[in-house]
Structure formats: C-alpha cells, structure tokens
Image (cartoon, rainbow, N blue to C red; front, side, top):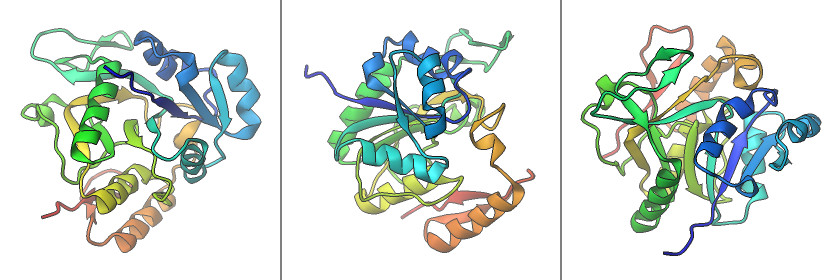
Amino acid sequence: MEQIKYSIAIRSKGRYKTINDKTIKLLKKWDILNENIYIFCPVNEIELYQENCPGINVVDGGNSIVECNNCIIDYFDEGDYIIQTDDDIHFLLELGTDNNRIKVNNKLRPKNFIDYNLNKLINNGYRLMIEKNAPIWGTYPVCNDFYMNDLTTPTFDLKFLIGRIFGFLNDKSIRTTSKVRDDYEKSILYYIKYGSTIRFNHISVYADTYVGKGGLAEQRTIDMMSNDVEEMINKYPEYVAEKKNKGRYREIRLIKQK
C-alpha cells in the first residue's frame, strides 16, 4: 500500500508552554514524526515555540485566525493533504460499547468513550476523500454519547466540521474570512465547490476550547461573536441560520441542504 503523505498544521498563539502537554502529546502517542508537524504561530513567538518544541517545524502564522488559516494554505502546495488541529487537544475519542473510559483531570470522563487511533483517522479520511471526491473530512463537534449514540457511519452531506481537528486537500481558492467561525465557513465553502463534506460521526475530540491563556479565549467578545453571526447569515443565507441557545454568545447552525 502506498504511503500517504500528509502534514499536521497546528494553529497556536501564546501556548508554547502548554502545547507539549496537549496536542503534541497526542501526536507523539500515535508516533507522528516531527518532520510532519508544523506549528503556525505569531512571528514574535517563533523562537519561544522552537525552544519549547525542539525538532518541530515552527512557521509564521500571523496574529489572527484569518491570517493563520491563510498562512497554512499558502505554505503548503496545491493538493497537499493537511490535517489541521488546534493546540489544546487532549484526546481523540470514539464512542465505545465497552466500559473503558479516559481519565481527564483525574476524573473518569467523558463516559463511554475509548481512544481512537489518529493514524487510522488520517488514512480513512484520505481514502474517503478520494473515493467521494469530497476533499475535506471532520469529526463530531461534541463528546456526547446521547447525541452520538446512533451515529456509527460517516455522512457526506453538508455538516459542521469543527476546527479542533479536520483533514483536507489544500485548495488555494478556498479562503475563510470569519474571525471566529471559520470552521463553519470552511465547511460551507468546500460543500459549495465540491457538493459534499465527510464527517466521522462516531469520532470526537476532547479539548480545552476557549479555556486558559492564549488562543481565541483572549479575543472572544460578545460584540465580536454577535457581529460574526450577522456577517455569516448575510454572506451565506442559504446555508446559515441563527441557532437558539441560552448562552451568552449568539450562535449559528447550518441549514440542511436538499
């Protein structure tokens, strides 16, 4: 079997001291080689990441989500297989049927989930992208066995592919402009161009999204989130609607396509 060539692109900002205990630790667990890993961070933090992550490629990723996404697209060649991740991932999980559980902060949670092999996800994702001519895949957005219970097979319609981890074949014509919901926008843009997205509904990621110093947590404001909702609805009225929720931030949902 031909060896699949891929690169891991990690978006990071201000987390050079914690990235080794999270995403890098997960990659090492599955024997991902340093030469395949690229950290995209602000230019003034490159030396700090190099000191804390020896042997790993560190690249200028700009100062915002929009800039970082464009830096990743521009850095790699057209058609390259990229697995993009956040810097705060603890576990890649599969909804299990046995009683194995994952320890998180010394607590047994989330329940009913077991470790999923990252290499298997990378290989299966690539195979389906080629078979279905749908050059992007993602995972279920939450670790919640209630919602995931009956979702055992991949889907190929328009689905939200959360930005914690997803794989795609680099298409330099697809650029996101959303400041905080770029993963929604990327899902939409790939669907518009290729007519399909791939989501592994039995697999999810446990991460510290919006928690701790650095990253998006320091940029996220009520006004920013609200403005982004308006921009997404106006830009993609056929694909985006506002989602009812009781949280402090306005949210969006994708409209099911016929």
